[in-house]
Amino acid sequence: MQALSNERLLAIIQENSINRALLAILPTLQIPHCMLTAGCLFQTFWNHRSGQPAEWGIKDYDIAYFDEDLSWEAEDRIIARVHQACAHLGANIEVRNQARVHLWYEAKFGAHYPPLQKVTDGIDRYLIRSTCLGVDVDTGELYSTHGLDELQNDRLRLNELNPQPELFRVKAASYRARWPWLILGE
Image (cartoon, rainbow, N blue to C red; front, side, top):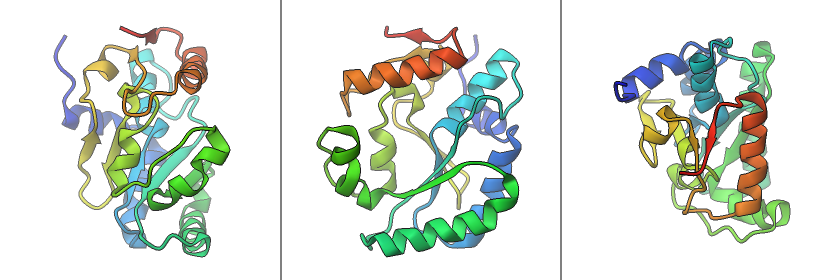
């Protein structure tokens, strides 16, 4: 099997019409250090692999950005701007300032979360290694913490940069319920 390249994965990501629209709209909104990230990327790939429609089973579309203004009001303004610009897409779009995650993560997930220094730090800490992906909305470049081998080989492994076995199990079970051919562990 030929290795999955960044260019090939980006082309597959664009098969999802909502991803395509978001990657066209987001650069116009002037959001600092903005990336389209998480499930809408790797789940589009899994849909491609399994012959499902590109948007099938994707619960939300995550937008991560990094702004040193840690106020809820500043984040809320960005969320409102994105929701207004993207309302016509009819998708659940979640927008989060990665500079603020440490302020609420422990209360929501029960684990300490150190402050992040840049938007990709959040991507690096996703629970499952093969899902640590983002697309920079300004450059169109793909970011992948651990490379693409595990994604290409359908592997779901705990990310050692955020080792939370119970949360990993829940997340992996959710993915395997929709894409049962995914493989846990090594």
